[in-house]
Length: 415
Image 1 (spheres, rainbow, N blue to C red):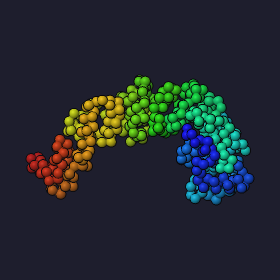
Image 2: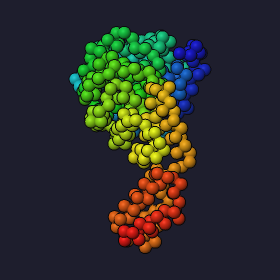
Image 3: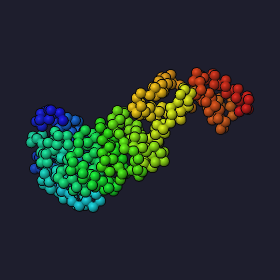
Image 4: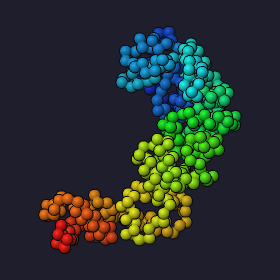
């Protein structure tokens, strides 16, 4: 927490868009309360630029719709109206009280309220349960500022109640820890452990979104708390055989492919079938799944000892997958002379632009057809033969040489 927090509270560092001030002003001039609320207040107090600004108000949704010419009733049942000012959308939500969470995710009942404190009481963590008004300052009934200063994640009120209302909050607690480097208050973490099995009711898509954000955070090693809290045992469809030391994740590039592959490798999930099951169960995109599988495959093989074998592997994996696997292995085995030689050879192949794919071959199918070769599958076979020659000797990747080779093959085999 920056020492300038007190200065921020005075408003010096709280930069609020003019559109937000306009919305608050219009609501207040028509007899309603209005405050900036939630994560944007937290981020402003941390000296960070909020991604978006949410506004809560005592005005009912119908009143908000009447006051603003451009708005969308995006969640009017739950009190939310999207107001557009200068074509920029802002969510304006009526103070509300929620009750009954039979699906461990959504409230069964929503009642509108005229109390800001009651609205803040329903929120997840103290650091998210603050409101701000440009003239009145911060409203902080649950000591969110105290927890920001102490770098602590704590629920608003009873953690068993908060997590019983919405099981996704357990993942969010660890995500906030990962993003800000905070700790989770003991009672809050104990409740996560006790209720961890409830996470199974949350959709795979929402779970994956939170896991990705944790892995791409500034403190991805916080992923270990997903193991310690037993959340992952209720999320992943395969057991994790290893007790993982995840501290190396921080030293890897902020790349979702690299960090997922590294996590699974460190956790002992090395069997391709198990990796595929995990990726499929979490509803990962085919691109993410295929890349994780490719990196994982490379992590389990010995790297090549000569340039030809290196080019051959790169023709199968692509340079991105190889580079990602190499970045993981370099951190795991920093003293390995073999890895250092592999990296040197890899960088030379890239810098010298060796041909490692058919698309990089100096001769195309159209060149062969123009030279009188018969159309058909033999064209593809011939291109693969030429490509194999170039993989063995990149200096051969010259059109005139390859056309000469092709002519010799044509004459010999009658293509």
